[in-house]
Length: 103
Image (cartoon, rainbow, N blue to C red; front, side, top):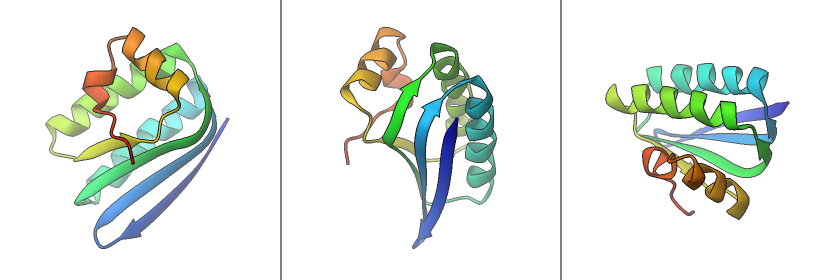
């Protein structure tokens, strides 16, 4: 299960995730991303520093949600993924879609 924390500063939102992203928590995160984007942040940073694992099915779910949010104009960026997580995303063709930035 994953813990979440949202912080706002000067119109920017940071969603910090901590723990394992499994299917139940993936759905919670997807809903939270949508809710935050509805508040129209200047930019939404999703901090993956403390994510210990991410299931492949969750990668697919997040890629779908992130794609839809970006099409709707939400400026969402994933930051601080582990090397393993970057490799997972790359292996599934998701690194480009998620536009991972380093912090």
